[in-house]
Length: 374
Ligand SMILES: Cc1cc2nc3c(=O)[nH]c(=O)nc-3n(C[C@H](O)[C@H](O)[C@H](O)COP(=O)(O)OP(=O)(O)OC[C@H]3O[C@@H](n4cnc5c(N)ncnc54)[C@H](O)[C@@H]3O)c2cc1C
Image (tube, rainbow, N blue to C red; front, side, top):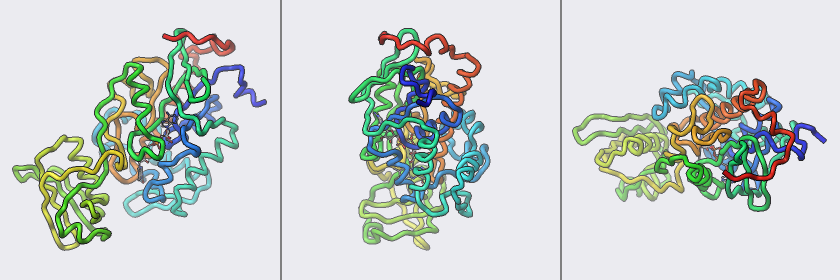
């Protein structure tokens, strides 16, 4: 038996959620020889990752940490330690080290060269298999109970698991069919964390304007959109794709304007949109619903999580990674990178703690305690 995963011991890290953050956390743990267990509610890992960039997976952007942090804008200070430790170029290096041919677009967006998100998900799966890191699929976690002496019991639908540390990597609350249904936010709330309002990010905006709906299905790759204040000031300006849909507008330029509008809480604004040579103005458009959003704005309050470690300030040993947190980025590979960087930060803190003994789990490691609920 692989003695890293001796079943008589409780596991060092239970990672809840096998999406971008959870898979990256599991791979990081495996590489640092820190015993971990990955628990995923769906039958397969990475359902949402498989959907990214229309199945092509824009996994990061080849830019400096400073530019990355500036572009994310909201939560910039908080994400800085994670991005500095795992910057876009480290992420690129990591995928190159797996011998995955990569493709760089002229604006720095990075994809697997074969244009298949499955290549990335399979690469994670292969490492976990080769390193022997256990993965539980079809295994929804129902709750987490902290133990009085430290550590946790993770309750799944069928059995309980003891762990020294738990990383909640259950994602946002959009595209619930992928398994991201907001469970992690509920676990966090039950354990005393504040959850900021969940709102749709990077999503289309609704209009019945005939000149748009009549063009449903048309893409304008050289589009542009501006958010303008009631006083006529340009608040946000983005050049990128504009798509016409039956419900209204979508595409990168619209998504990034919508993210700005949602973050700023704008109610009165004009959206000026360029379709090739034509320009139309729209007033106070509504976003499409959260369930269709590329990313969830809001989540576990950053005030309750230490940005240097991803550890909860309320419950020692509890960590968060990815979209479950109140972090989100624009289009262009930022959101997957945020998931990877926060996951890496959490695992490196736990692994370092074990080496340095600062988390002091040594005494408890041998024993299989009876649960003591807090
Ligand atoms: C259509 C679409 C396109 C996108 N394109 C891009 C792109 O090109 N580039 C980019 O950077 N980002 C993109 N994103 C955003 C990106 O996919 C997410 O930000 C990223 O996947 C978040 O990673 P995560 O691990 O936090 O959450 P997820 O990847 O959503 O993973 C969470 C996992 O946790 C599991 N889970 C949830 N609850 C439980 C539970 N109770 N027990 C066990 N498991 C549970 C879920 O089943 C899921 O597998 C896109 C998103 C969408 C929807």
